Length: 128
Length: 128
DNA sequence: CCCACTGATTTAAAAAGTCAAGCGGTGTAA
DNA sequence: TTACACCGCTTGACTTTTTAAATCAGTGGG
Image (tube, rainbow over all chains, first blue to last red; front, side):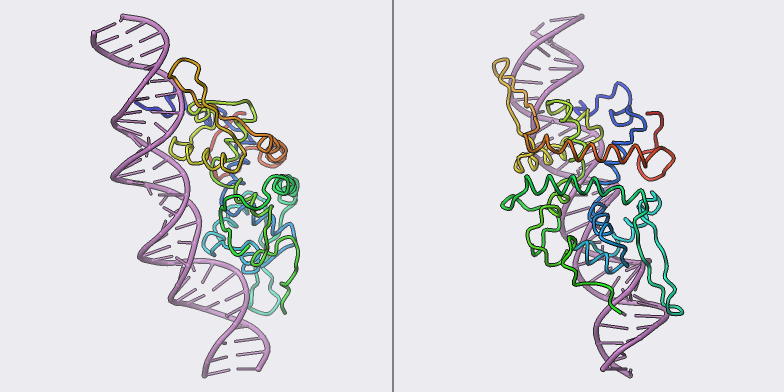
């Protein structure tokens, strides 16, 4: 039969109810999210600027991710009205977003220690 | 004016050489990977057992992720030969994998601090 | 005027993930 | 003996997500 969740009740995930870790993982594992956060930790950026910094994410996906992260209060969008109608959108990390620094740092540390070149490639491995 | 480029900072995306952080993010953002690691930090597990602990990942994807993580030496697969031919596969974190504890911990901390229920987006559940 | 830049949106197609079923095997209970 | 629940997967169809590419509206420089 169902080799998956034989379900004496809901799945383990649902069973957990509201679990901050589970949810946080759910947010951070969305494609490009960690790249976006990492780029913004380096300083606020405009849309295309961010796209270039992230490297490989297309504008449609980027728009979507930015909207999601904004609803989660991880980033905030500001529209500069510097020159009449030219509106440059600037994306910044909120305090909550800035606290993801520790996560990025942990990943950075781990990566340097355990992913020395030679391994199989993954996402967006462009002209590295 | 151009407020961008060519900052040779950490997030110079387009022409980065081998970048461990970028690569590490690429690995960890694959769907279910962080969940898998988190489950295994709790102790080694068999295939179905792991599927249940992770909660919601189907067997096809799980197989794929486990293979990938094995090639990256994050987990290792052992085949128990306990009863004659019954071969139970057991997945364990390698030392490298165990060091992802710090990443999970960072995510955990962040999640508890900034994802207290109420937000939209992922699975709507309650009670932790 | 022409072209490059800004921040997007739209499209169709490709990639990724999911679902349900099933396979060979074991062990347990009727 | 039959039956059925578990084990670790694999397969093929289906759905969702991500993608490249084109496009749009506006600005500024040459």
